[in-house]
Each structure stands twice: as structure tokens, then as C-alpha cells.
Length: 113
Image (cartoon, rainbow, N blue to C red; front, side, top):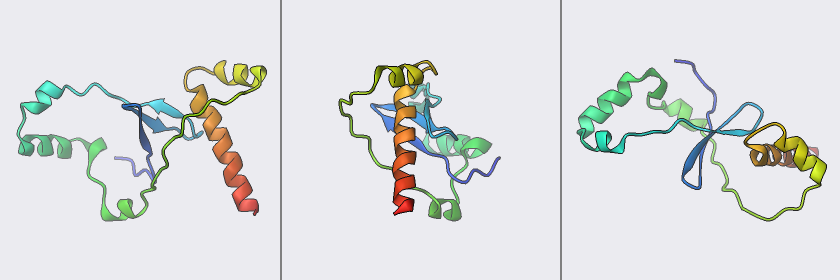
């Protein structure tokens, strides 16, 4: 298993998204078979989870590095047509990429004082 410093996953309108290195979000893997899962005992579920090297429980040390995230506030925002076109031309997730650019701007200004 790879030791990842911080993986950030978000639920947005009931769908899971995973933060990418560039700050954008991509839809996470889904497809839970709830009927099959509901037929398993708690012990079977725990054993299955522990057998998956990519889904091992977080250690206490990993929990100390966990980052609390903020919720998104949905607004109407006017954006120059060419700017919007540039982001949209790069495919799905353009709104998330715009948010990532704004977040980096805010963080840079906070550091600058």
C-alpha cells in the first residue's frame, strides 16, 4: 500500500469526488452493491475491508494529519466568456478547477499578509 500524506474526498450533492494534485476534483469510484452489502454480517464486512490493502483503516498518526474541509457555497458568478471557455475546453470539472485557482489565490494572499 502506498503511504499517502493526505487524501481528500468530498461528498457533493450525494456524489463522491477525490482531490487531484492540481487541486481539481474528479468523481470517485462508486458502484456499491447495497443489496449484496446488506446481506453480509458486520464481521464479514470488516474482514472484507481489512483484506483490501487500499482500504486499510487509518493509523492514529494518519488521523493526526487529517484535514477538515469546508463546504462549498453555491452562488451565481459572472465570469468573462473567454475565461469560462478556457476552463471548459479542458473538460469536465471546470467549476472545480476555477475554485482551485481561486483557493490558491486566496491562500497566496493570506501568506503575503
